[in-house]
Length: 408
Image 1 (cartoon, rainbow, N blue to C red):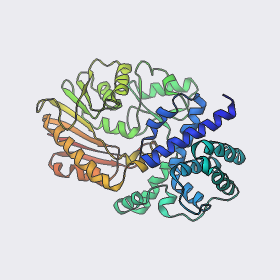
Image 2 (cartoon, one colour; image 1 turned 60 degrees about the horizontal axis):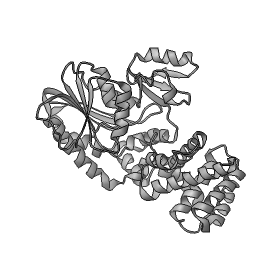
Image 3 (cartoon, helix red, strand yellow; image 1 turned 90 degrees about the vertical axis):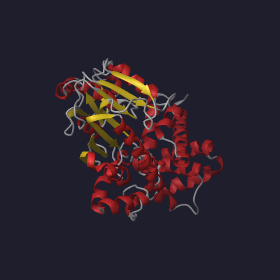
Image 4 (cartoon, rainbow, N blue to C red; image 1 turned 135 degrees about the vertical axis):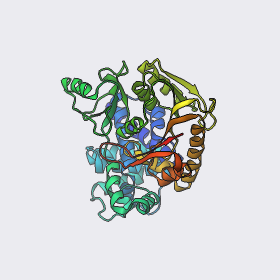
């Protein structure tokens, strides 16, 4: 395929992925695996950048585009316009090329609207971005989410951490060898890296790299995991010889880190989803930890007797509101009506986790959400057993998380 054909194809794929996220509420990562996995590496990287960039800057781009429209566009048309707008406002694409190639993509994605796409993008390219935005638009958040956090945490704090969601996160690794030694190895290879400041195993890689090409990857010396997640894993007291249950385990990073931290314990990762188990198995295979096994089961009804575990880590399903830096699609996948549903599910799993926890044992409840409904409200019925709780707001170097340590 000629270069220009590949360029137009990349825009077609990106527009279809955006439509799947915005209209069908599907995860961007899954859509990328479906639609972009067979593209050339450079083209796939461009699609990833464009899709995630549009999702990060959706609300300001929507305002920008709407100035030149008389009515709300159909989802396919909106996806193409957002894609063209992102190239013009945020990428290094020459405006005339961004317009021309996006219009060519529109002829495939929304043929009847290609003239409209051409007219809108040309006007956008000739104009400056709008200077007047509502607070939620300036922070690139859904209006309900901005108001919800403003009421819970105050406007100043929300403005502070929400600004980080628009920036590309650096790669964060968890090392199973001393972090300082591994950073030295990377620097010897000319790769900019530093030891993280929030977990003893954390390493920040500042250069763009393919993680699978890094030294020690195949031997299980590193895992991809944000610092906040590592902080939570290290908050669970060590077990020397007992059973450690890792509930809702996929993709497996936390269980692997637990197995590394507690080599004499038996770590049992529990995952229900058949579609997520292959990636979990692959991580476990690469780590080659003899004390780590997998069980497919529902965390709400565990196939284990009462009081059998010395430690339990429950990484519960949630709205993912704390990881919008890495997963900006989460802004569009969940609404306020789902928060009580998540809370009920999390409490059900927490009760079951406490059932299998032995006397004197510890359970760590973890979610990558900062919503009070999924944080304090979940553990409220169990406050007598709570030893420690902590909400970690997002920053430039880590995601947002909440964890609570409970003792049986």
